[in-house]
Image (cartoon, rainbow, N blue to C red; front, top):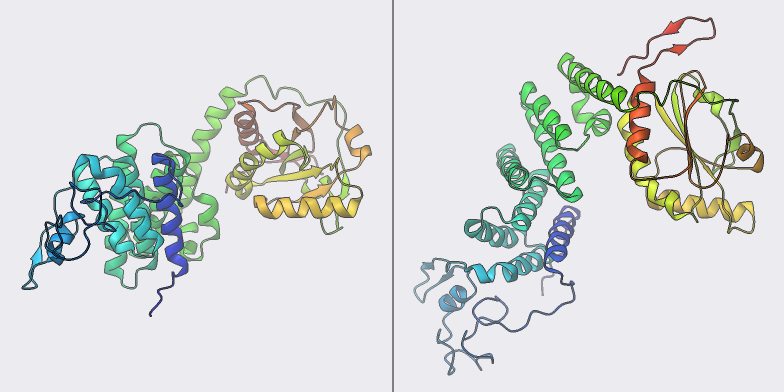
Length: 422
């Protein structure tokens, strides 16, 4: 028997379609479909009977065992006795949820073609079906990334872009998963357009992704295929326009909060997770967010995804984060380090973390608990202290970082050097 194994690219399709479908219709991957003749391809029997026909031509089997009729029963095109194709049966509204499950199972088996056809049939009946649009766009994106020929890549990319734009227009409040999908599709479109010399279209796709809530620029900075884009005047102008707009908004929101520096000075030299010393002074000239946290602290853990996003958004402009960890439940330093290492790896934390000591806590003004965040400007002064997370904490940190990155850094000689966003 030939066993078909999924390639790495297929798994992204399987997972994405499965997640969307399961979240919407509330079933688990282990749920068995009840026998429902006339809908499920796994039971193409008599829609009026609760039992499967005993075999081809048996009583209650209106197809008489005909492969063509069996194909029509579950909505698939089949062939008649002469081998001629028989068109698909129209999809009924009451069949949509079950067909979504069928698309999931097809994707699980690595049959993206069957999953695509099923989702296309759903969208032909319900053009704005949210799960259908998302699932079909994810498959198209995966197909574009695996395409062997330029024409196949172009067609799949165009399909994915059309689907996510339709999804965006149809549903004003996008989910996080939809924002991520929208951004990844537009990023793939930008890659394709740039490779074809359509530079303005590539930059427009990046701008559209950003305006849709997805920041593509950290990825652009690391993308070897977009090296020439990064050095282009158009790309630099796009970054400057976005930075200027963000700065104007941020200044308005933090007005009055950054007028004074906090009393006292703050510094540290602490070991990182490999035992190497890390000092705050080595980041002089950059804006630094110091996060006082611990793996045992739920609010600390909840803040990590936002901090990662903040780091990736602003790192290119001279922003750093240092996490100072305090483990209350570790019997010794070696155990604490292993606990933090494991968490850092699982959470995908890209910035350095160090192991804290009591002396460092004593330097923090009005320290009252975990997490505590301090934002330090380019001159080494503490400009913001956040001692309690709330719904608006991350927005405040984001605005503060944006404003401080635009401030001049005073050099040792006393001259000011403007910090230009890159």
